[in-house]
Length: 539
Image (cartoon, rainbow, N blue to C red; front, side):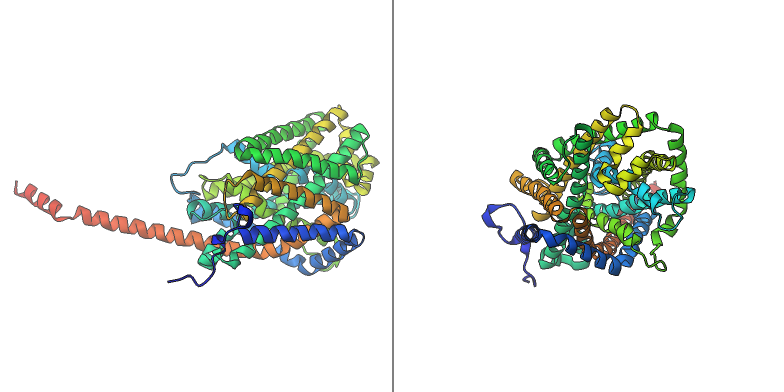
């Protein structure tokens, strides 16, 4: 019987490229169109971006808040349910990477630049302008840390865990391509190979590219500020665009090297530098205060998790929630195709319980320690009268890290180390993102031609540069919200699809075990064995 739909994966791509034509060319065209329009209408782009972000955040903020909480509850349930023992790739599958390498790569891809950019700026901002408490008091300080950890903790990693687990399961356990469409096989069946699957993958590509552009934009602003702070180099738009070009070139070299040589090496180097920088701050800074605040902040965050994760500013009718929490949820959702696909790529051989607990707990603990070391100390400095950090946060967020480092001995050397770390995170985000987008646009190929990876590495850098030119941070935030909204609907559907797929496989496994048991029972009572037993009795 002929198929009732047209399989787009069987269509020949143009120019002989090893790509999935409908996804590749549609995504590339839409991205190119956004670049052209932003450059043509640069003067009005910033205002337009501001209006769009306000409208989308105001109308759909509740949906983002509800969705993200659903994702967290769902993945925690899977970890401790009957599905927790399921091994990705089958019972005999073995992990491809060591646990340390695995953690290094998922943390570098999942947080990296953003955590360096906001670990000081966000807590201090919330302390100066708290959402609920009175400004400049102890309650405001604790509240600032609670909110910051909310934005960077369990919920963010739950989103990544959901997408990564879904992709890893359907790719390694079901044998489907490493693309977002594969996750929806229990829901759509073979129609994932039709235009339905194309639309899903196109949304994933757009969310990935614009989500990456947001982080890359933040990262390059911080690198430029660091160079200005240490070397006196102008940190204007020309410098930022030049940095994007240079760092994108290095990222291209890494992506050409592949995941084993390039991405894995840089990710492990990132973690070594990050751990080194963290230890330096803990040792040279107020050590006892950092350790005390880490314990207190983590406990307060966990105890207030339900309250803050469901707070929607209903009665206040303000814009704080839209500017912060809703933006973050949109950012993580926009990043999820990229980070999720990348985590799936490196997670074969782990059980669902190992995967979820590893993705949720370890990165969250590291994040809480990092924010306590940088954010809590910054708030303490402000409380003690250090106006420089507060001024930096209010006037130029990208300089906050380097102003903070002035409170630590060996400022210049540590600032150089911080610049190297931001740059390295920039590179790993770009090259791993390129591998993911290339996989999405090539029909799930894990290893595609080098030229395609180079194209996407260059495209990501171009989008980040254009968005900075067209409207700076406002443009980056708007792009994140707009691409995250439609993908949030896909993630909710993904929850159902993953549960259905796991339930089907568990049912088949139980039926197979019953069949084997029945076969064994029949074998044990076969005529030969009955005759043998009878002869024994005669003897």
